[in-house]
Image (cartoon, rainbow, N blue to C red; front, side, top):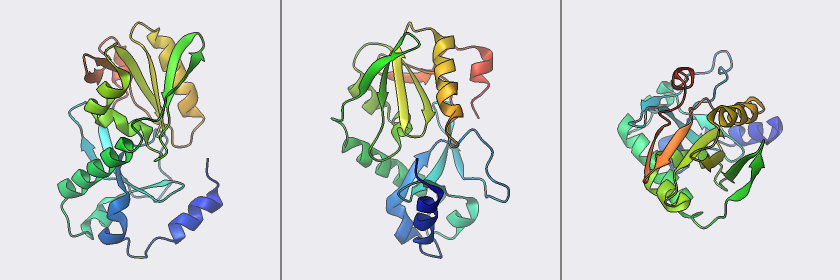
Length: 206
């Protein structure tokens, strides 16, 4: 993970007015972290996706992502929808450039796992691009979990769900920006929240 000094230098290098022209190329849709934001921090603008999860707006500043809050958005000459569309376009372009990056494979606690980390730092964003998931994971049904912004895990569809949840939570708990997302199912090229997850798991979605 980048040091606080690296993040501070990147933030200090941003234009003081955080204007649209300077930041629009770095816009990305980002899942909001599970830990509370620091006191005084502005909550990010979020969108409810058809998938059933909320997604925020963030700006890639190199070693970290900066959330886009309502005040910043109001200073830009675009609507919320236009900003989000630009973020999705940027995400797709970044991940398309890495289409042929190989996934790593291994086993965690006996569960076969494929894991993907993006050079762009937002592997979890692939959950928002169903067609890209279908191309990369093939015809076999999979379970997917994103414990961190830049980590997407895939397991066989018949994997032990409780164990996969434990793996997700163990990894997310080690990352200050760990995510709070349910387990997803990719079946026949369609992504959904795993219908066989427990009620407690589905209640995590916010």
